Image (cartoon, rainbow, N blue to C red):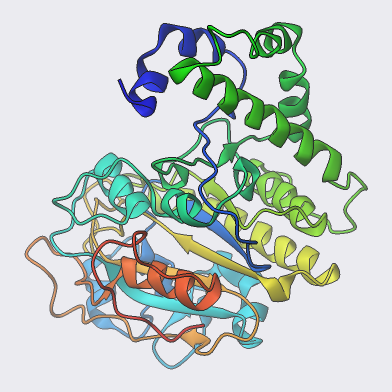
Length: 395
C-alpha cells in the first residue's frame, strides 16, 4: 500500500487525527527559496450572481430578463456600460486607483452546474471531463514548498485546492488553538515513540514524520506571528476575521506564500436581492479593510488577491425571485501596479447566450491561474496547470 492510501485508510491514522486537520500529508520535495510575493484567494462559495455584481446598467436585455431582480438604484457607474452593485462601494477607491482588474466571462468548456463538481474543477484546474485528486495550489506546493505553513487556509478543513500529491498546506482558523493542540499530552506521547524501531519504518515512519512536521509548523506560526493589536478597524463578521488573520500573518513576515479564505451563502435560488446585498457588503467592506491594513504595513505591494466563485447564475430570473445555476462569471484581481486595471474585457453579449440561457465564457479560468503562477509567483506552470493555457496581461 502506498503512503497516500495508507494515510487515507489506516485505522491508526484515523485515531491519531483527533487533533485539528493540520495533520496532513507532508513531504519535502524542493529546497529552493520561495519568492517574496504572496497570493490570497477569496472563494465566494455557492455561485455568486456576477450579473448583479457587475451590472450592465444600459442594457435592456438585462432588465427584461430580470423584471424584479435587476438592480435599478444606486448603481456605482464605472464606465458607460458597467457598474458595481451598490454594496461594492468600498471597492470604488481600488478601481479608481488602478488596483482592481475585473475579468469578465471567465469559465471553461462544457460547464458543470453542480456546486461540488464545479468547485472541484476550479480547485483542481481540471477539465469538465477530468477528475484530479490534487489541487492547483497543492501542485504548486509539491514543486516549490518546503513546509506546510508555506500555504495556510483560514478554516478547520483543507480545501482540495491546497492538497498536492506529496505536499499539503495547513488549515487553521486560530493559530493559538493549533499550537495548543500540538502540545496536547496524548499527541506528545505518540510522538515520543517515533524512535521505536518498529514504528519508524515504512508507512508508520512516514505518518510520524508527517505529525512531526505538523507540530513544527504549529510552533513556527505561533512563535513568529506578531500578536499586537491591528490598527485597522475590520467589520464584525466571520469573513473579515479570516482576512484579519491573513493580514496578521502577512504583516508578521511569515514564510507563507498562499492564503486561502472563503465566504459562503451565494446559492441564491430565492429572494436573492437581500441575501446578495448583505454578502457583497461583507465582502467589499472586509476586503477594503484588509487592503488598508496591508498598505499601512507596506505589504500590499507584494500581495495579490484573487476572488472567484464556482459559477455564475442564469441570466433570466426564476419564479422565486432568485437565479439558478449558470456558467461564466467575473473574477476580481486586486493588487498594486496591475498592467490592465479596470475592466480587462467587455461583458459577453446578452443576446448570444448558450443553450441553457447562460453567459458564454471566453476566458478560461486556468489562464488566470497560469498567469498568476508565471507572472506573479514567478514559477513554471508545467506540472501545475494541465494543458497549455494562454497567458493574460492583467499583471
